[in-house]
Image 1: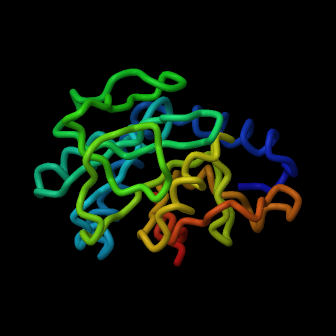
Image 2: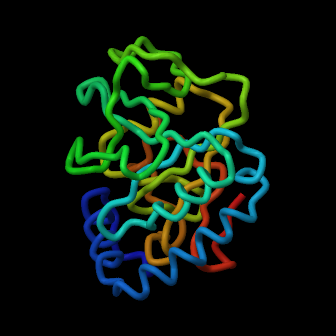
Image 3: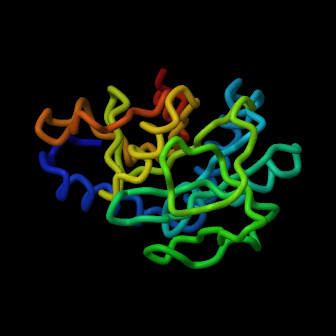
Length: 212
């Protein structure tokens, strides 16, 4: 976690390289620690709607979280990109991992049909489908490339989560990351955009890196 990079491109490249350097066993073990901490959080316990990314590559694996949420009787929604130019995505309810297909940038996504149930959106998305009860407590579980100690998030550059969260203010957010993705100190001011939205918490495998 040495601070040696000062621009978005360099930070993304280094953090992804460090994350990709985790062995299959390390990825599994660290993921298990992270998901157990998530399961014990009040936000997860209380949330009836779980809005969660479908992991890919060396990201914190979310398959076990999705299965746990479904087995616990929670509603599970995964993101589907609907307008790349406008940086828009919707969260579509799934009933199992088999509902996820390769989509935008090879990311596993649900498909949208007339029978799909979406989590409420304030924008006028091109997706047309019923929406979930907006008064039911929800939790967004976010990915990210890197985070600093002020909870600033550096994503993949698409801006989809910032757009969604700006249109759904008030929903709880928790980001999942490995210790190697935590930037040492604060990001340089020049790479922080005023539209970037911080997660409420960041959960890593280390007890020392649990931010509020």
